[in-house]
Length: 177
Image (tube, rainbow, N blue to C red; front, side):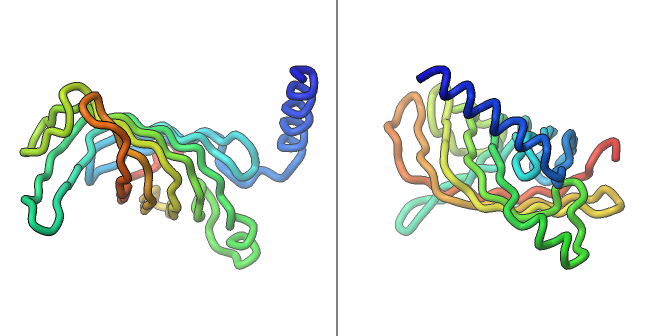
């Protein structure tokens, strides 16, 4: 069984290398709204692994309860599949620096204690995992936009898993391009 898995991985890897490369192999960004640094590494012609480290805004509220907000330090990793790069290229739309729409599996962890604000979700940590849809655009000037959203499971050292909404918006600049 192990032999077949190694063979499948090897064939998939070489097939991915032989295809046209649409994603940027190494992309680095600085984001401003919620300050963070980001590194996106191209894996195949349509997939990347995105690492982000910074501060995030968290808002919690609802009908009949107080709305709380806070800034937390966080780390996030996303495995992204860009599904419309060829279509954008055919329409002569920009695809440089991974300008396209994607589906991703997102995992994130943040401190349980806020740096600023009034919402503390846990004693030590809060983590989330789930699928998201996103769109990323990078312009010739280096200006970058990213909007993503989805549902996932959130949990902490004090609570069991619960359904959460994951929405992210970032504005920043691509570094070194």
